[in-house]
Image (cartoon, rainbow, N blue to C red; front, side):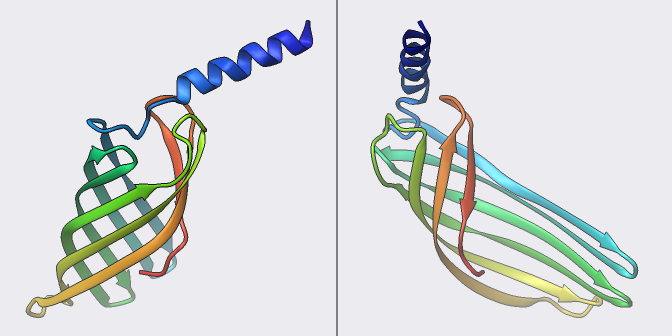
Length: 144
């Protein structure tokens, strides 16, 4: 009986996690960070959205807003740019490695001075664990 329940649960999990990265699906996500300590504050918000143009391949855009304050030093950064992501492996599996790349164009101000433009390129391997058909937990291993 336990084997039947386990097999049924495994089958259901496979059914639930199938087709998360198929052509026509959307990828919506981002991250939010906040850190506060004595004389230090960091805040950042980075939403993104993409579209799967082919199975396992999504492309889209992201924006970011960051604020840092350390003592009297303040910096505000705004960035935006395109990204692309390719998932590797079987679409029926809940664990899926991927490769992620993005280019961000931004401006930052320090202590109210004039804006300075910047460009940043990011390439990183990552992994997604799909909790169900619509939600995954992701981790990237890279250095911005």
